[in-house]
Image (cartoon, rainbow, N blue to C red; front, top):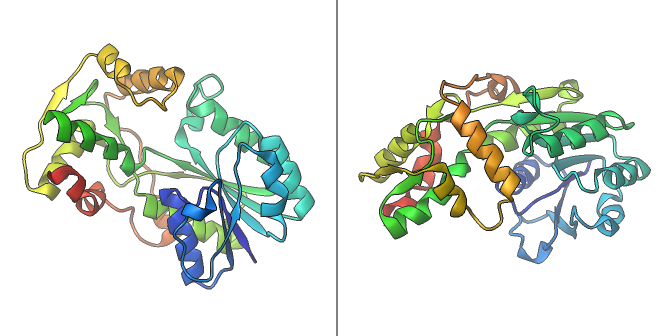
Length: 278
């Protein structure tokens, strides 16, 4: 079995490629810029840009299984090329937003839902990893902390379920290598529901310093959002945070797939403490 890992420069994809290689599974790492990949010895790379269908056929040639980051724009072309190449199984890293009632119209959920439905309608066996909030979503807080001395948040008491990317990679490895786990969806969350204010406190403890939180009006946060974030996504995030006033539901499916409990947010905080220490 040879596995194509898309998005191999990402936190999940890079760890998955390493885990598969360590377990003796042949891996092909796909990236829009393979020259920037840092891969374990023995892992081949290939140019694969999910927004360029011309790169699909070459990347999929000889592939048995795929780990796919959601990219809705050309999913029909990707599915067609995967079927033509004889791919048998696709594991898609999706979002748990697809589990909500407004998934078809929500800007965060809708693209993931398109991908999941395209795979379900194909001849491919597909497995969805519906992930909660990534632990690394806290990483951008380091910049305002360095430049302003505080972390500005529009809804500091909004709850999330930070899930460690290493856990997602290990879950992907499990469903890629164990046929009995394929063909269904798994809801992956962290082990605890934490408010953003509580996440900051966990980071502060890991760093060993006080980290103040400053509530800011939603319109101020939106005016200063990252340039790469589309306006509709920013609006959907603000709506989600405003509504998440209670601890979010948690699952134990990371433990089901990996055999160990989900990693606590404190582990991510310790690994990334240097970014918040200055």
